[in-house]
Image (tube, rainbow, N blue to C red; front, side, top):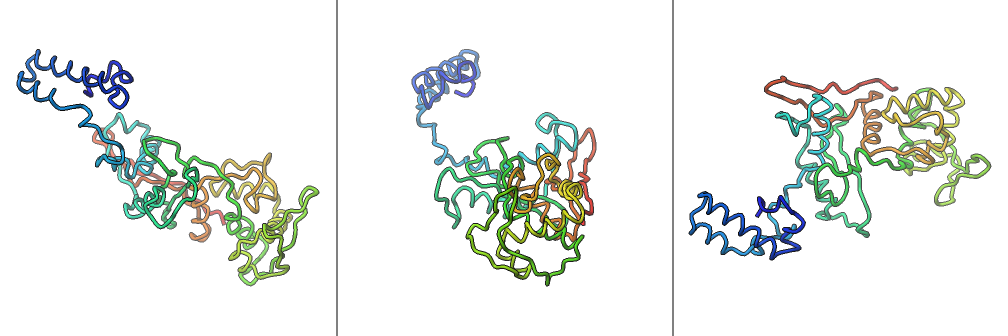
Length: 316
């Protein structure tokens, strides 16, 4: 049946045209008998099996797990091509990755509704990435819900979204520690912020006034981050902040789009989950950024071994 599908795959699709598929399958079997690949008895036995008895839905198919780890595999294949300059689909190579199966399986279980996490809307999407903060190795990727195929759109590495207040620690406050002498005991201000003739407010429209920096971060309060970045910009200027964001992997940030609302992950500031994870990892690494990567090494018989050299740089 698979051999017979090739000429007219739509016409011979057994899920839509069962009779045509059965006839086409039998034609191939008859041809195999005619050319001596099957005996007549074997041919008759093969034709006696109904095509519909060979079909399964995706849910019933025990081979449905073929898509397991697929988002990670696709990312590694793309990285292998960048690393070696060769297409791993055309050149034989052994690709050794940093994937941790337990982590990857848990991510896939969450995305596919096989965990305690419940999604209230089928259209709700996810983008998940887990990184070993010490060396930049990606140990798990969630490219999005219903990632049923290969080389699909990867929301974790290619999807750009507004990061919101997740940027507060590594943008406003990290730079305040670096250039303004802030400490963990710093007091920051929470009140409406005037920007281009309009007030930027907290979602709750409630304000703490002066409060400890630790509390501002813990409760993800936006206004203190704006006031803090304002002080940073007064001290080192826009260009230095933009350069810092670029060094953290946010290479899309430029002078034409940048403004102070970046402090709360707003306006034109959009990032991937991969970029966001790497930026936070730099804080955990005491100011050292490591480019995220999936591959430990690639081995080929003909061209030798390739090992990634992820870009590493001190940003603070």
